[in-house]
Image (cartoon, rainbow, N blue to C red; front, side, top):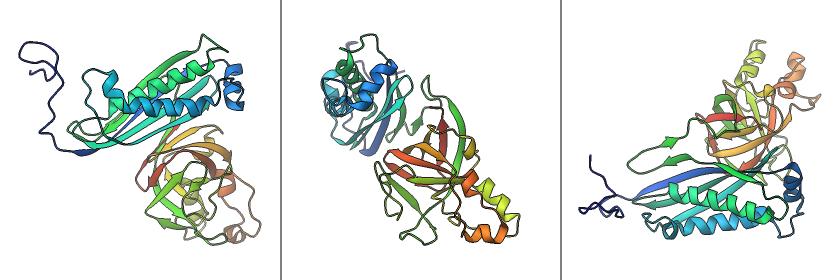
Length: 309
C-alpha cells in the first residue's frame, strides 16, 4: 500500500493535492471542559474577572482554525469560507461544537478539531484562577462531508452525551402572520436568538420552535378528522420519537440545527377549532417547545437525535 505522506527517501512530506478537484467541504468537531458548579455559575453570570469567557473562547477558536496549517506540520493552508462555534451549558461543564467550511482540494476536519481544542483551552485559561483542576476531554470529529472520502458521521456522541431517542422529520411548517394556520414549507431556517426565519412567532423567547409527533396526530385522525401538517400549529412534524417523554433540557439535533427543549406542552386555547370538534387537542399534552442553540436548517426526511442533558 502506498503511503501518501512518505517521500521516496522514507521521510514525511505534505501530500500533493494539485490534481484533486475542488469540492464544498464541511466539518464539525466537539470538545468539553468539565468544571465545578461554582465555576460554571461564574461563567454563566459574567463573574470571571478576565471577562466574557465564551466570547473570548469563540474568537480564539476562530483564530486557531485559520492558523491550523501553521500548527500542524503536514496540514495545507486552507481558505476557510466559514467558521462557527456554539456552546452549551451542562451540569458538569461547558460543551462546544466547532464547524468549519471551505471549497478546496483538501480539509477541513483538522481546522474544526483545532478550533474545538483551542476554544476549550481558552475556557480553561479564562477560568484557571478560580479552578485549576478543570478537565478537557471529548475532543473528536462529529461529522465531515465533501471530498473523496465522502460523508462521515460519528455514530456515537462523546462520553457524557447519552443518545435517548431518535426519529425523523415528516414535515416543516410556518405561518407568516399571527392568527393564521401554519402551512408546509420545503425547509426551516433556524437562527440563534430568533427562532425560525420568516415565521410570525419568531423572537427571543422560550418557545421558538414547536415539535409534534405524527403518532399524536394519528390519534386525532382516528376521531374522523382530516388533518394535515401544520394544523396543530407545529413547526416540525416528527415520526419515531416520543416527544413528550423528553425532559426539559434535552439537546436535540435536527437537520443541521441544534436546539434545547424548554417546555413540554402548553395551555390549550379554548377556542381551538380542533378542540371544539373533538373535545380534545394533542398539542397541549404531546407538543414540545425549544430554543435554537446553533443555526441550521431542518427539512422533511432529516434525522432527529435527542441527547440527555
